[in-house]
Image 1 (cartoon, each protein chain N blue to C red):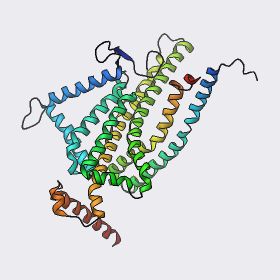
Image 2: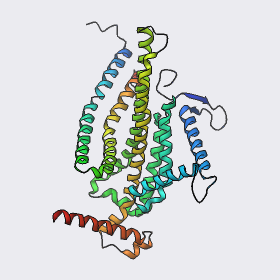
Image 3: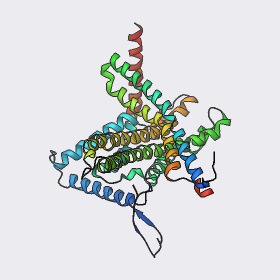
Image 4: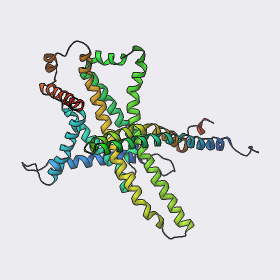
Length: 90
Length: 285
């Protein structure tokens, strides 16, 4: 394989794009987690429909807290794609 | 998105000369000021002609204020009702600044500076209220509980909350902006270059559902989550004092009442407790 035609900048940019993709694997975890949380909330609403308001509020807060980890991953990915700090280090 | 293909907010103008030389005014700052002025005008319009029986704008204003006060007293307790104006303002500002995408502009909260400024405000609000309610001694002591070696982790925890709060809002809104923008550009290219249509007709069926989710549902949810987390963390910081005193000698009613805890609050907490106990008893029986 001939890599001599690839500039260092292109190499860093390409690997950054890969890294951004890898960072977003965090989505698997949050998908599972939010699915479980919503499922449990539905179960408890089915068991106690009169507590729907409280359950929904708590569930949304919980979902937002869970979301934090994937939001961090998203920000890492966005920085790698649009505001790459690594290219400047070359 | 920015003009130069970047992701930052568009720069509207630079300030040259004077004490603020080199200051850059972006779209974000302009819209934040416009929304703030709009809310002030709305507030003035609602309270200009106040009557015994509300009607028109006053009725709308009273509805909002009443909802916010009920919300705050449900979440933070009646004792902390003085936070209601701040929470209400925060919610309305966040709601409108998140929803700017609906009108085709860049949302204020899709800028890290805006969300970080708001969460710094929340950080100081939490710390100052914790110090004010627990006293500087108890405030410093709670870092060393339950074990002294956890001090670094506890201090880190105080800082991670506002950071995650601001990143959560920023990430959600920016992700919405990026997804809408990508979909629109993709459909534009598809309809003009692939299908050779004179106008980007393919955008028509996609714009509305995307806007419904990213510019109506998500802003309301994110504004709600931001204010809700702010409220619960301020309430948690304030609650520390009775907990600390409860661990030591028995609760001293006279001292507590003298320090701003009304008898009504004590009575209410007692009533809640008996209700819980009664419910448990019924369950067992």
